[in-house]
Length: 481
Image (tube, rainbow, N blue to C red; front, side, top):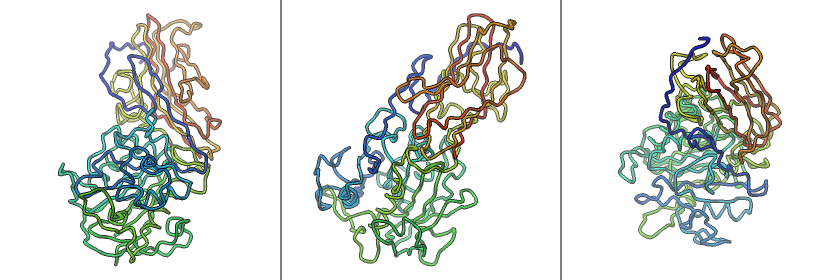
């Protein structure tokens, strides 16, 4: 409503912003790491922060964390590193094309930690046994959406190794269905609540598939020893594909190994941890050598999938650093309907207040509108794949004001692009009380020149000491192709 005022109310929020931390009313950008290795080096992070060593599990590549090279800088045999996944790690290390690390704390994206997901091309989740936090799910899903590879390895239902009430089936399904980025079956499959005792699931016939026929060999069969499968839903994501099936199953049911894409990223699912177990690990664990099982080709499947997820054949990968481009919309919570998630904002900016109507839905971002000296900010980081020739930022903006001047911009809204150090790369536009009008107007800008970079999109509203101006934003998008 023209000339409307709102009372100063600041909702207490803790936003899991991407690449940003909120301090008072000012957003400060933390360091978003850039690739530290040559373009041919694939960067893989193995998770060990969610009870992957509980019970008899020992799903680590080395007891040296985060860097396995501290245990042996030039491993030649899997026993040179200690862990039930050491065969996997050593095989990758010996190629000279992989940089491997282990995460032991909360997973983040866009932060300054050495194990922040922005530093990697692929994240491996080897049978997690504790739920991911809301912030972690946002980080994982945004990482994949922006070009990262996600390798999810489950186990059978009921395999609650730490007795906290959750098994890997529930935890991974929760990641896919209860996150702030996309909970509408984003990968096109769900994990079945099954305990399949044994079998040798067979690979489909597809000589062109890089996971089944990759640089590490040809996949014919896998191993299931108390595991589960997935149900595929191609109507939700047409990219989902079953590669290995439980005996007697095909099509959308009984998929023991499946792949998919999401945004600019890639996803792989495996229904059992037994195939990645190399039979060795820390003292006291009862392990089984599924990696070298003679009835299967588990090593080739694990290694080919890792290479595919990491973007083998391109000059990079995760976080949008690859040379390929998949058409996608990159912003999370782009219509603000998930409330105070994904975006970083000053308190009260993301709101469903009825005093200003959203363009669609109930929520919008409402900057300023107090009639007192106020600075409000709204930000989100995004990684634009270098192979994209189109990167279109758009948003709908409504401005109303109590100012009566027709010549002086007392209150302003700046739309800017920042780099990972917080330096302004470009001011795309500046709006003011002089642009007030009824309804919403779509604004669009090209960000194609930032392909291959992680940038922060930032809206800054500055209001003078008297007479309110409200800058209301809704239905944002960053479409790449």
